[in-house]
Image (cartoon, rainbow, N blue to C red; front, side, top):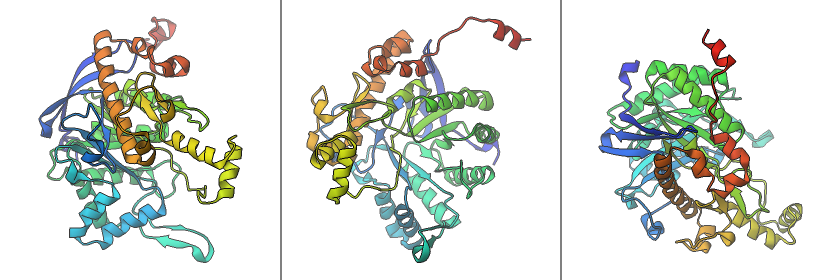
Length: 433
């Protein structure tokens, strides 16, 4: 496949660039939708949601954009996916994959959707787990099964098609060459009889060497739609610095002003603590770091280490975190895991400290993760639209961010985002010699 073969099915017009940051307002026309979208644009969390669940949420656009994300986190998930693709008859496979991705698409006939899939390992290579007599070997996918998966992803994606991603760094089951072949072959299948924008993946944890190699390859193929996989990392500190490097390399290597960026699998909060009633938001900050489309957030995956049915273990955890009882700890843990985004402050706040009335009862938001994530993404969607209007008028990121308590109270956040203009000096002069 040559660069001439890849059609982004997107056209881009730049409208505004903030004077003090990497904040761009663009008008992006999506060819097959015959629709123009002003970006940055926040996509809603769709996993496990049906229309009845969220009908009471105000501000829902008439034709919402949803992302259904999946990180194949553990052996159980891998076995489930492998069985669906290799054991199910074609008539059952679609329904089983809908369940795997938590898609209730029959209830969203007017919705525009995309599916983001990340593998922690090479999906074509068998692997073993366990020890001793309990050690088992699990097969990888064959080519035909993977093509069935890609065909499903293409069909389930009514808006954008995100090529699946695989972790590359610190792996011995995949090399950079194999990774690029995986991407090319995936995109080749997705391009067949296609008129939707296809996005090539770019993992935020790539080394500079691999990042340059991947982007150089993408330039040779003409890929100009890029989805940046945050791999459950926050948009702050080291990772906002990496993101800035990625943006600079995209500009320098791709040399294409019409590159479109989709950010996803972003960590929700910055350094959340169970003893705090709020945590600074991470995902909202992506709009100030060059994102065109802001997808879903995802928390880091860790093997389950807590036995929630073991009273002694819970008492030990409660004591470790300075709670008087396991009941007090469990209540704090539920609030900690189900904070809601506050657009006025850019904090995620515990439900018992949320400053406004919410359209969904706290009991539901504590019980139903899907509804909780959907409400958060809707509140963020509305805030991204407000931000766009304000910065479109003032062209100043700093002026807008100074109104947010999380930014004022955490100066490092402002330093990450605002770009200070410097006068031309000796370094610039020598660089031009």
